[in-house]
Image (cartoon, protein in one colour):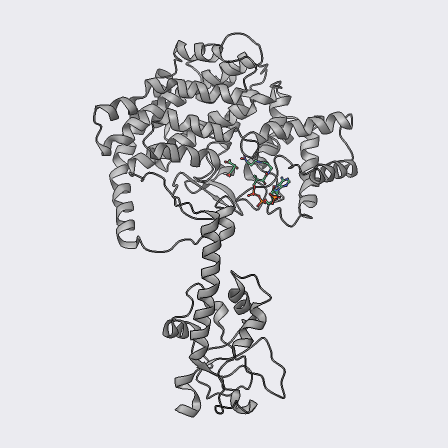
Length: 556
Ligand code: NMX
Ligand code: MLT
């Protein structure tokens, strides 16, 4: 398996040791919490998965092994595969070794074509693609070796073996699917003198007088390669692979997720949307017409394809790379001009909808328009291109997970009644804790306020909590209250925020928290403690000071 195998064999023992020691020494460190909204809302933002091939920063987008994707646009996709796996770009020899290995494995078995031909002719290209990958499972080295008794430490080698075979065959399979889908004849043979992406472009067999189509396909395959571990296709692939299903099963499953319109199919939807606009306005509309069109679509309860993202909060740098390519190659083309115009007009409209967290274009907003311009007009096919590229990331993640012995994926699900029970216990617990807590404090200002029947320092009254609590939803009432009550308080000055009494023995919120075992979920910033006692000459304020009874001045 060449130099890539050797490099990984060198790196993996160190990686294993690092991960084992992190788990051993810091296994109980909390890195995330889960709210009810997240449990119902696609686990958005929950950190419960590790992926080292790439990260997606909300304000920067895709970063592969520390390198922003915008700096990798000139690299070949197979170089990116090497980078995803090893953390470094290959040198010339390493690249040649990988390309040689891929070439040797590129022949597609004839049974794959038989399976594809047996499918109904109107099958979606993504269904064909996923089926072809699944059919090749019979060739899995991982499954064969596992059945023979493969040692755990060698899982990754078998996964790499399968991954290389799978990736080597994908361009010809994908190009063959295109030709079948577009009724353009039999699949064409692979050209061993071309790189992985160039060969794919060449087998698609479209006009390419100046080589820009090949460049575009290489760019396309580089930009879509990976998007950390939580996107639908990568996560599905990861989950299936975690059961030690081999890479053919796992990648095929990932492709089925990619085929959804909220994920990879959005590139097909995006072009469809642009063509609809072009048809309706018989060319490029005015900005006002386009705005109206977008608003109508939103009012019809339909998404604007190619816009929004679960993680990103800026223009996707992958969109920027496609946009720059279009500006260079076809700035005056009407389809491209609509893509460009959508980029100017759409975000401002989406920003009017507070619920839409990311109004900016994602990778799918412009990629299809350029394919269309190069003559690849069957947009039902576009997600297959995405899939060929995303297989790089899926395979890299699988190999590393098998190397690190990542456990079978099995989060705990809960039922809706369980959630309702948790909400009500949480409200009761908070009430109980608050009540314990308020017993432990007394108010400095009670003296000036005249006190209550039991003395000069009345305890904080329950009503001061409940008046506010009643106005809040039951699960988070206290938290809201405390947030309301929070006000900057210099605990170091040890003086009261209302009367400025320097002798007030105010404790820092963290000291109070630990001393009184306060609700652990209250962020320290919300514990700027305060007094709820009313002074006759001062209306109650949002800013209060609590004093611990045992340290109140009168008891010192
Ligand atoms: N057009 C209309 N509504 C949108 C859009 C959009 N482009 N983006 C988000 N929203 C809505 C979303 O449907 C949700 O509505 P509701 O509460 O009624 O269900 C609300 O805004 C909140 O969604 P967000 O939290 O902003 O986004 P979320 O993380 O749930 O979903 C996407 C992310 C990507 C699924 C969503 O932005 C979307 O549907 N975009 C259009 C489809 C698309 O371009 N997908 C491609 C993603 C990239 N990829 O290649 O996979
Ligand atoms: C992707 O490339 O996978 C998409 O941008 C979706 C995602 O990251 O969730």
